[in-house]
Image (cartoon, rainbow, N blue to C red; front, side, top):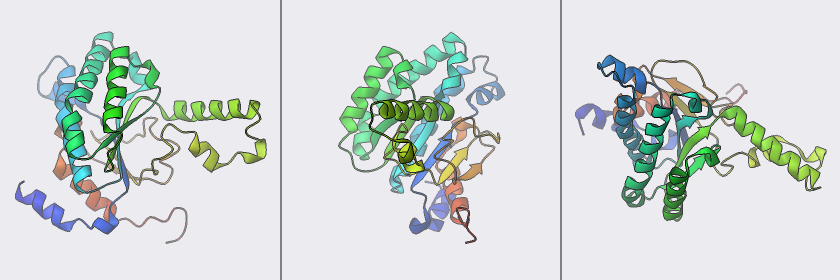
Amino acid sequence: MDFSEKELLGQIDAARLPRHVAIIMDGNGRWAKLRGFKDRTRGHRAGIEAVRAATRTAAQLHLAALTLYAFSEENWSRPKYEISLLMSLLKRFLKEEIPELMENNIRLVASGRIHRLPPDCLKQLEETKTITAGNTGLILNLALSYGGRAEITDALAAILEESEQGKIKPQDISEELVSRHLYQPGLPDPDLIIRTSGEYRTSNFLLWQGAYAEYYFTDVLWPDFNKTVFLQALLDFQKRERRFGGIG
């Protein structure tokens, strides 16, 4: 741990930490290009360590949940070789990280249309979820084949199906009802959403849950995201006054 990291940790106010942090992990391709790699997938490989750093930091600070935007619904349109590599990296990560997830009391869950994942990836995802299901610390939520609009669409479809079965009446429909039909209804809404790589877009991420989230944008490319950058985002969050539409 270097001095700057120690200094940042010393400034953290545990009482003002977000319960749930979500991260749009962006910049893998640009990271590879800037380093002269012709294959942008080198950035995806490098990004794995940033995932570990973010997860370890969230667990160390006793956050309730960390959501990582790992693969979007739109990402299926990428070249087949890149998708194949991403799925291979995902499968390996899910298997190799089990010891660390268990050691740090982290429970793995997933959000998205995960049925679209290749069978071997889906099998490993379910296995890792099962193994870590009893853990009581940080909830690590991987957004896989995820899209905010898709999530809301799927929630409405489920509500409509229950309505046709007579379980729901029109007057029962509320924000709370919609929230209960989202992919991970047990998670609190994110307090802080971080986006790397200097882009200023939500990219179809947690459109419902992020209604009152604070956003933190950093020019750091995802493979360079580390504990120091995470702590800087958390310290910035602590300075903000959250009014939720009120006057404070």
